[in-house]
Length: 210
Image (tube, helix red, strand yellow):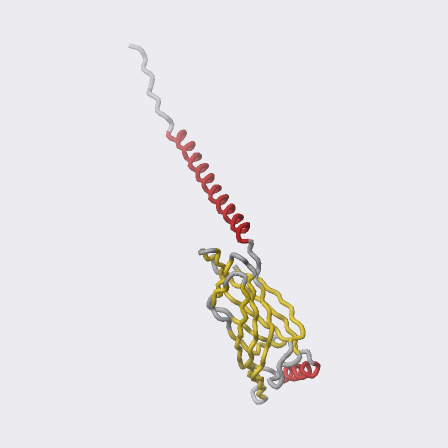
């Protein structure tokens, strides 16, 4: 009788590695296609909608109360600022959401605060808002003296800070909400209720928080 050869069985580790590599390669290709499609859609949207940044400015201001209390060194301020918001886009609307805040300060000390209304701003639109602000804050004698000097010179530096959550509407699709922050450095000739302030100069800076 001849000598029988022992049966051979396939190695379990050999075929599995190739299959895993194929699956991994397929997943990578699929992920690449998704990223490429998203990038293409974003590029197409930019080309189609041509987004432009909105602009904001403070065009007017009126002070109804500006009362300094020498007993507790606090200042009560009540004023209205006229804010002009322009949407220059032809195909993009802007939604102004809840949670906005406006603050007016003098030399780093807050004077009063308020908020913007919630509204939708359409294409190629200019909206003018009357923003009411009031507040009572500590105001030391040194600040009071500096403010009186600024009033005499006719150059009162004020900082207006606006922070508002907005989202863009492209057709029927709303892009996720971001927060727009604007800082306006104003110089007015007076902040007395007895005289309507004249805005002598204004510079603006802004940024977006994603």
